[in-house]
Structure formats: structure tokens, C-alpha cells
Length: 135
Image 1 (cartoon, rainbow, N blue to C red):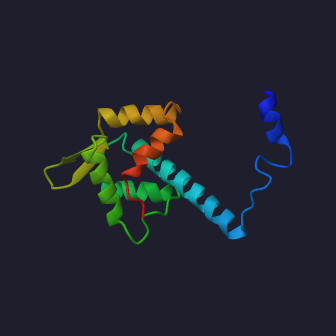
Image 2: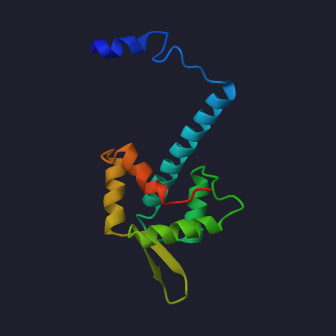
Image 3: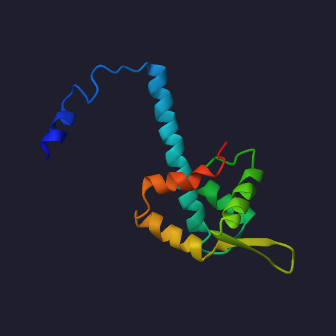
């Protein structure tokens, strides 16, 4: 192990003079968890859209994966799908019955491969998520 990193293993921590209140610590942990959930949600949506699906089908499959982000605000999913469509990650196709199906576009397939292979840095994913309002 590099000598510079050995100090980090000690129980003293990296910043011994820095203290956090319990409230601040919980807030930081909640924000980290929210960012991880957003990343996982985007990954789940991209994976599910490998096959063309309606928004309704997508909603059911996202819920089946344990995501509750859309409870009582299902319209948000359609806003998210619209933004992904505008950015060229997915395409929406209307069938003859007036039902819209969503699927990955070439750019979306490339993004999915990079995220799954962990070639897309956490910062790049964060930058990508920045234009999406998650509230």
C-alpha cells in the first residue's frame, strides 16, 4: 500500500479536527443514497427499454424492481421519457392504435453498454443526471 494511504487506515480518520453533527451526517448520507438511487433508476430504465415498451409497461416493470420514485406522480415518468427522447437516448414510436412505444436509440444503447461495463465514470453519469429534475 502506498505510504500516503496508510494514514487513512488509522482510526483517527483523514480530518481529525473536522466534526459533523448527527443531523448533518444523516443529511449527507441521504443525499448519497438519493444519487445512487437516481443512477440505479436511470440504469434500470435503459435496461428495460432494450425492448420496446409502453410507458405503462415500463412503470410496472420499474415498480417490480423495487423503485417507488413514481408513486403518486406517474406523470414524472413520462416527463423523464420525453427528456431522454429529446436528448436522443430513446425513441418514441406511435403504433396504429395510438399507443406510444419507447425503445433505446443508438445513442442510448451505447450509453447503456458504457454504464454496465463501468466505463462511464460516476462524474459523467452525474452530469447526465443533472439535466433531469428528480424531485
